[in-house]
Every structure is written in structure tokens, then in C-alpha cells.
Length: 341
Image 1 (cartoon, rainbow, N blue to C red):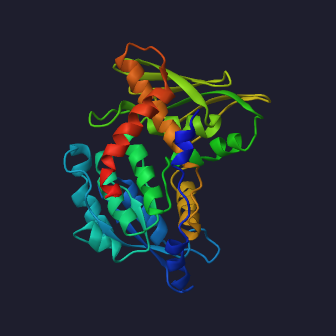
Image 2: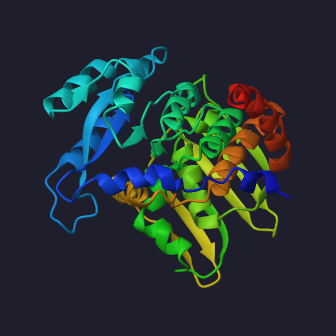
Image 3: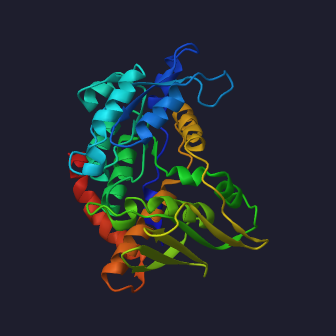
């Protein structure tokens, strides 16, 4: 039923990975950052460039260059660029004038631009250069851009993956590994700011939706959505009858987490464990070229959010994942039309 999700799976490019074979044990794998409009950029650079013991998963990597832009239209993002640029300069990281200049200096890329509307254009440059890339959330500002990016990666045979850091919290990973038996349902929550240039949940609700999918896995068929000034509530029905919900919060107490309903127990998902678990996954991905998440799962969770938006527009009626995927596929082909030339 969701064959088109599997079609966009990203395969490892042996030619790209062979470039890492020439990196000696004494020379770090060189990382480049695109986008200094998010706090993730200095935080990730600081983690990778810290002193690490030989056995540390982050040992052997170093952020060496960064391209600042980055949003030029979303004030809350663009206003951060000067300050974060100075922070990276103070770490000894070279600031470059173009993505092409960056790509000539690095082995792999962290695409950190906070503004998802720029990701397709920026990712195409990275793919054309054959550099493995982690794309920070959101993959794109809508489902069509997200599908187009994954299909472009496949076209160029370049490894990529994307994830919220919430996926790798210990509690969520334990649940995914079977700590409560089969997951029969899940209610996840997170803060949920909305940015008009992005599909509602893509901007910040992605954190809670990623948690939901980490626990539930794929297989959602329909989504219905209720929205008020202060809250978002998306209810997904999986094909096997399970129900998963996401609650987005803009008023009162907030945070990340939720409850999972399993065969063996009902328990809280647990606390957020910060950036390092995600960076460990990114480092392993850069070493191997093997994405830790099936692209079909990432695409489906973005389809979940797109379906929630369509449900909201239609007064809360259930919207099929299949329907939004078909519409996005058509638009994605248009976005990628230059690839066929």
C-alpha cells in the first residue's frame, strides 16, 4: 500500500565512502555545517570539536568549516546568524562565502539551516558533490519538499538521514527495543510553535511526532486533527487498529515526553537526553554511510504531519496518509525536474 515510501529508500554509495579510506587515523573526518541560524550549529560543533578519548564515538571528527545562511526571511532565525557566526569563529572554524566553497573543504555535511524552505536547494548542491549529509529537522517545509529531497539523494546515490534528537532519548529507544512488549498505543507531547512558512507541526511539533513514531513505528493510515490557539491534537489510526496521538503545547506547562501503552506495561516515555545520543548516531552514519533510520519511516512521519494539517483545514475529518503522499509525489517530481535533464 505504501510502496512509494519504500521506493525512496537511500542506498549506500561505495564510491563516496571510499573517500574516507584515505583519511588516516591521525587526520579527522572533516565536517562542514550549512546554516548558522539555529542553536544546534554551535552546540553540535562544540561537541564534535571537544577533546575526546580514543574510544569515544565522537573521536576522529572535526567541524572545520561553516556557511552561515541560513534563513534570510524568518526573523527569529536570521537574527541569530551574526552571533552564531562569531561563536564558530572563536572555535577556529572557517566561515566560508558559499556552499560550493564549503563542499571543497569537507568530507561530510551537517545541513543545519533552521528554515526548511531552503533545504531542497541546499541539499541538491550537497548531493551533486557526493557528500554524505545529515539534514536537521525539518527535512523540508512541506511533504513534497521532503519527498523530493529523499528522491534526489537516491538519484545521486548519496547517503542521508534526518531525525529529531528526541528519537534517541533512552526511554524512547528502550520502548522501541521492546521494554513494554508490543506497543499498543502511544500519546506523545512537545512544545509546538508554528511558523507560517511551514506546515504547522513541521516547525516544532516534529519533536513530539518523532517520539510518537519511535515508539509506534510505521503503519498509520489516517490522521484527524483538532487545533486551538494554545494546542494541537493529532490522532493517528494505524492499519492494525492501534491509535497514536500527538499533543502540541503552546500554553501552560510544557516539555517533551508522553505515555506508551504496551502489552507488558503502561509507562512514561521518559525525559529528553540532549543532543549527544543523536550526534553519536550521526558520527556512526558518517563512518559507515548507512542511515540508522529507514527513509520510509521518516517520510511517513512527515506525511502524518501533512495529513494533520489537511485535516485541520477540512474541519477535523480523518485524512488518509495515502492521499497526501500521492499529492506530494506529483509536486516532488516537479521540484526535481532538473534531475532528469
